[in-house]
Length: 249
View 1 (cartoon, rainbow, N blue to C red):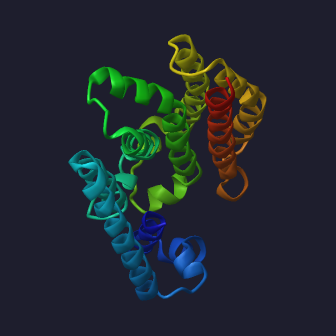
View 2 (spheres, rainbow, N blue to C red; view 1 turned 90 degrees about the vertical axis):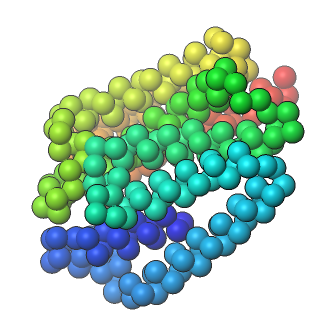
């Protein structure tokens, strides 16, 4: 929540298109919220998160500190500084890796820190299991940048869409949806996931429908939610089918 608040706070202050973006698009200006109040709230949430994180570091060990520091750094510099990550062709990569992989790795570590081994093989296993979420989270950022392309250009935010164009960005969006399901199949094939995880493939028609809607029209208020639905439903059904296999088989 603090990262979301920080994103809106920084985007509000960095906006070049003051009339359109600051007053009509950004929630701070649109809802007439005090920027000072937003800053105080995000600062409080950040401090609370840091205290909780440091307690977990005390309980589980220093590896959590390094992973947490990486996540905090990405969260801060995602929209802060003279060249925020969100304004560069790196936003999709860092958002996907941080929220899709590193947070999953943190969860694995917290539940097995007494025996967890930092071998490349273990990291690769966590990465493959996390890959669908990595791709869908990065697609969320990509869909946002596709829909905001014209606005980003006016505000000097050169995202990956600026470099590869909307048409190619849409192709990448669809490709990553395909790769997400391929990763689910590969995880089962390599015996990293129970056979019930393949039931997540039942989500393909839903994901395809949302994908086609975004391909047809790239309007923030109408079709950005397609990427949100894909992430929400895709990650939910992946967790559900995986859990069924672990608990009942």
